[in-house]
Structure formats: structure tokens, C-alpha cells
Length: 216
Image 1 (tube, rainbow, N blue to C red):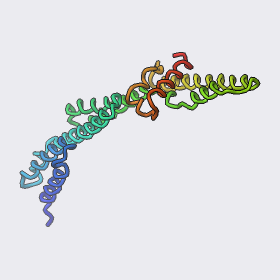
Image 2: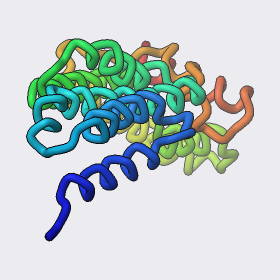
Image 3: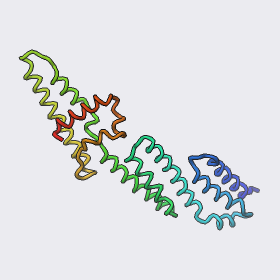
Image 4: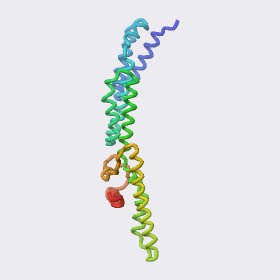
């Protein structure tokens, strides 16, 4: 005859050991240990149900905190200050929840809020330099007199396109973040600056050009 209690005890022992000595899952280990000790200390399944109480719900809270702590540590190491806000809020709020469905709802709400914060942190369309490069190219080109009017039209057209791109970004992002406007100092923040693989002089010159063209 199958000894279900023994099998459950073994199952929860293995679950506990999965996180043992793992520095990333300290809360989960303590939670799994509490569940294992609850079942290891009874002689029949009915006793386990009584001792289990809300330990499964608290287990979800523990795992949530561990996972969000890893997210937070990663984002902080990359100086992703905006993205780091979501896991920090979830970590802070999780211990106050005792029901899994309420915990999930809170996480979903915080992640939705975080997506809006990330959207508001956009540097679009400065993240695409192609038009700026064309404008610089045609502005510096040394061409015969008969071609100068053509090149000026190229510059005017690309300048118009660049301004339309900014207006488009403000319109699209504004659908989710009302009143959003490009912040001219935002690209210099480390989380954005690191995505532009050029030296500081080239970066600063391109940002100055972008600001001037868009009258910011």
C-alpha cells in the first residue's frame, strides 16, 4: 500500500533542498523549510493540513521577493533607475499579502505602472541618428554652385522629417503618458548614454544638433 504521507514528506524535503545554500533564494528556502517541517512533524495527512495553514500562500510571497530582489539587483547594477522601481515596489508590498490571487493582482498592477514609467523614460526619436547624419553630410558637402540648391532642399527635407519624427513620438507616447515631451537632458543619463557606442564628443555634438534642429 502506498504511503502517501512518506511520499509527501520526501517531496517537500526535496523542494526545501532545492533552495538550500542558494543566496538568491533565501526567503524561498525559509518558506520551503517551514512547509517541510510542518509535514515532517506529523504522523498522518490530516495533521499536515492543519499545520500547513497559509504556508503555501506565504511561499508565493517568499518566491516573489526573491525573484524581484534579483531583478532589482540587476537593474541597479546597470544604473537602470527607472526599471528598478517596479521590483522594489513589489518587494516592499509583497509581505503584506496573504492570498495568492491578491498578490498576483498587485504584481500585475505594478508591472503595468512600470511599463508606463519606462515609456515616459523614452529618448525617441534621438535614438535614431540617420536623419541627423544626412543633414550633417549635405551641410558639409563641398559641391559646385549648380548643386547647392539641390543640397539645400535635401537638408530642408531631412530637417522637416526629423521634426515630424519628434512630433510623432510625442503624439504616440502621449497616448499613454499624457503631455509627454522630449527631455533634452535625458539622453545623457547613464541608462541611455550607454546605448550609444560613440565617444563623448561625438555624442554631445549629435545631441546638440538634435536640440538645435528641433528648437528645444
